[in-house]
Amino acid sequence: METRLCDIRNLNSEEALRGLKLAGEILRGGGLVGFPTETVYGLGANAFDAEAVASIFAAKGRPGDNPLIVHVASLQQARELVEFTPLAEKLAERYWPGPLTLVLDSRGLVPASVSAGLSTLAVRLPSHPGALAMLRAAERPIAAPSANLSGRPSPTLASHVLEDMQGRVPLILDGGAVEIGLESTVVDARGECPILLRPGKITQEELRLLCGDCPAAGQADCARPASPGMKYRHYAPQGQLFLVKTWREAEALRLQLLQEGLPLPLLLLSDESAGELQQRGVPEEQIISLGSEARPEEFAHNLFAALREADHRAASHIIGQSIPAIGLGAAVMNRYTKAASKK
Ligand code: AMP
Ligand code: MG
Image (tube, rainbow, N blue to C red):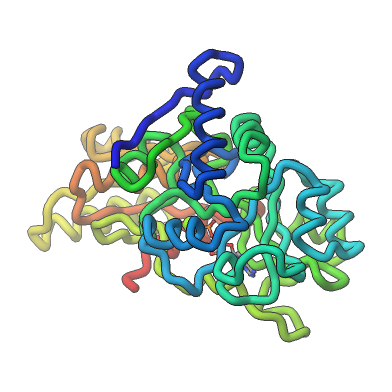
């Protein structure tokens, strides 16, 4: 299958209008489309079409027990798919359109495979203008996980989608670099307070302030199923990633690896640490800067691209500097720690 790439950065351009029309046709016909959102790129299919949904799992090599998020163009479309609770109303009012996914009881309109057989369904109204334009062109809800091969870092550029999905999908809409760079915050919104299933840009601290409480799954006293997809190895580069806290630890580990006769490691560092190590003679080409230690949003924005860059450079050993797991740092460290785990 030939994969077409279509630039939709200017939504009023002829290329974008043609691409969106084609995306609508492909999606209605049961095909797959790669598309930008404000979090990461998604791989979409008609949520009502079981065969189209099955082809998402096939294209990604995704385990069938890892449920998908259904993307909608309006609150009304979401209400048709799931049972809204007062909490869901409050969260949607505050955060939609935006990077928050709500897990609610399904009304049973979409095939069970979308939610991996669960009685709940995850729904999200994204804010990205290109994503919204595509959802409108499709004229139906779109099931979409991240557009990477299962296990790989989520795509934050159209070129990342092409890397993983070339020959597997007919169309990728190129909206340029995504804004946030990490997947949406996922909460179970069926009860009195949100239960955090996956950390993201909308932080646990923020949700706690709005709702009084926001326990993480597992910490909640009520027995709820945790987010099934979170058990899998995720976001992993091909090389081995080691996490350290400071530039001193990074330098000590770098020297240790060299002493062991291993190839030069690649360093993923804060801007501040990159400066320190360069002053100590570590060549620039062995370092990728993830952003300032004071701005976790920069780490969020750059992490997945840096993990893919490590693969492009065939880095067998990667030393990654972590940041405090506070606020958005918690979402960054959730992905970073998974990327560093061996299995
Ligand atoms: P992805 O879009 O690839 O980030 O995957 C979507 C993620 O959303 C899954 O891996 C789950 O962690 C979560 N999710 C989707 N549907 C549900 C659900 N019904 N219950 C709990 N978590 C869900
Ligand atoms: Mg994913």
